[in-house]
Length: 126
Length: 134
Image (cartoon, rainbow over all chains, first blue to last red):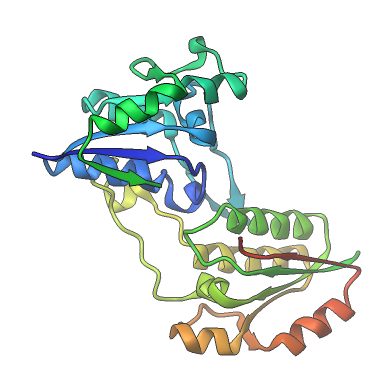
């Protein structure tokens, strides 16, 4: 079976309307269908790995919006045994410490991305 | 009380610009200002009445639990909110953009216009903000 790597760079693109990140959602759906997939968070998307984020509370007039629950979704990815990587350099540039990360997120150095890509057959970039 | 015109261009479900624009409209209404919204290109699908909620298997949520937010409901809610606050909210679509996309079936309260209408809204406003697509 071919191995897929989802590289997610765009962050919080339409998460209020979709109530999730569509790239994370798509990858999770692939896994549910039996695919061999991994996720690499890079750029602003490394913030998805932060454990205490909360985007709830938006409302437009009387219409309340549940909003995305990225902590729930990233924890679900980890529990589903989807390998989840985050670029350590991108975390550091944004001042995100290891203690802030959701358990199960593996950090890799930027210089290690090429090797990670080489270990997969297909790359999905989002 | 001021009058503000906001232009939106992004289609639904594609950009953080969209909820940002809606939040600005809500804030202006809440503060008692009149608002004109002109939707151009993909943003004309925001009020498309055919939008439907769905369950979400990845979230393990039923249709009711997911309570998926469709922007057509946000428009309806903001129009009602403006009525409550006794301010005027105009939600106008570029008619040609609507035709191109086949999204003529819009929620009640959304009107059809042209760039000339957008210009007239701007002329009659104290402030204008165009949130273009990237």
